[in-house]
Amino acid sequence: MSTVLERPAVEPAAREPEQAEKLVIFAWSGELDKVWPTLILATTGAAMGKETTVFFTFWGLFPLVKNDVRITGENWMQRMLSMMNRGGTEHLKLSKMNFAGAGRAMMKRLAGEHGVASPQELMDMARELGVKLVPCQMTMDLLGLTRDDLIDGLEEPAGATTALAEAQGAITLFI
Amino acid sequence: MSTVLERPAVEPAAREPEQAEKLVIFAWSGELDKVWPTLILATTGAAMGKETTVFFTFWGLFPLVKNDVRITGENWMQRMLSMMNRGGTEHLKLSKMNFAGAGRAMMKRLAGEHGVASPQELMDMARELGVKLVPCQMTMDLLGLTRDDLIDGLEEPAGATTALAEAQGAITLFI
Amino acid sequence: MSTVLERPAVEPAAREPEQAEKLVIFAWSGELDKVWPTLILATTGAAMGKETTVFFTFWGLFPLVKNDVRITGENWMQRMLSMMNRGGTEHLKLSKMNFAGAGRAMMKRLAGEHGVASPQELMDMARELGVKLVPCQMTMDLLGLTRDDLIDGLEEPAGATTALAEAQGAITLFI
Image (cartoon, rainbow over all chains, first blue to last red; front, side, top):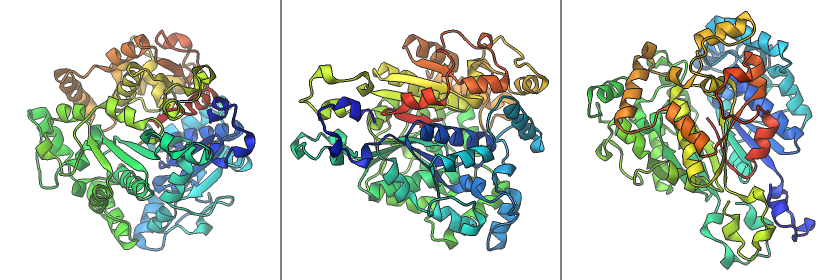
């Protein structure tokens, strides 16, 4: 935070960890065109030295599902939902102009041609840069997702209290 | 704000009310899957002791309509809009996979089975916890909504200036 | 920021520009009902004296296209996309209930009747009030948009690093 610049007289030892520059993203959307800004902002923030946390909730949890897991859930409702909304970074759809996948394919090709990293590459980069990727426990329960359905390298599942505690003093975005 | 922790030497008397931890949500969406995080974050924030304000604007105003009010508006355009997009916490739709209500019903049943409070329960809880629920005056004018169409326990309708003044120094989310 | 109020003993000379009240909006959506809050909040923030920046990215870039430019892009994919999603403030659609333009026309008429400025008026107002309107360079590359396709009075195209640097200590909203 800029408070470091603002108070030159305060000695470094007095600085609590809370003073660090932080970025907290509430990733609610599971769609390709929202996962992109989520992960681009998260990796950029981390590369800039900000403590970066992404709290994946609701539809936002689907991109954290392993790409090779087909059906998730413990009951027919959850299983049906996962069939219609397959998880994993390789199965994301555009929020509009998806056209049964044609729009998505086009957007991915354009991205590739212009050197924009894929969601999977960005997810890997985020983990390497130390971005804290936190799955929402309540959503996991709701959708019947187990820790085994999700990719490696995530933080412990947590709830809104954890996310809001982290968000105080941070750049906060709900995507 | 964490500034309280950061500067232990400042004596309490110097702390202005602005220093309190705050959460300000701009609730733009009127859909079930967005009303949920709005109210879960708002009630969690308030329970954590944060001064919490939700500014309901545009589609976000519909969940504040009384559940037993069927048609709102002063002219045919506003009335038509309210017919197609019925207000009230009991009539919220999913932003996707709603399937004429089947998706919504499923999601509500899953929520019930996993102990997630309903939007109505969360709205009641928010009021009890002292969350400031502020309807956007401009949207009320635009949609022809009167104060009588809306539930009790709300703050006075206000505008963007009020919302932004409240947002300074707060965790801010546009949902 | 409220820090000015919090620390009356600090002399003005010690205040860095970073301490100013700031508003930074990440404008991701190009739809009428999202462009409205983006520009209403931006102009209100600027009128309140906040340093205001809007970073237009992804679909959010389309409202910055000149109203008289019909097709943009350098290859068939980009051109097809621009055909289906025409840019410019005069061609924005509602995110829902657009009904092939009927919903949009209705909403615009209601806005006119209730003294709500049009997106074009708000865009002009934003530039007059000194709101920094920043197009996202990466999105321009992705969509094949050139600087000539976009309206006048914008800042230099920039990326996520610039946007996040600006966002530190600001009210931040992802719309």
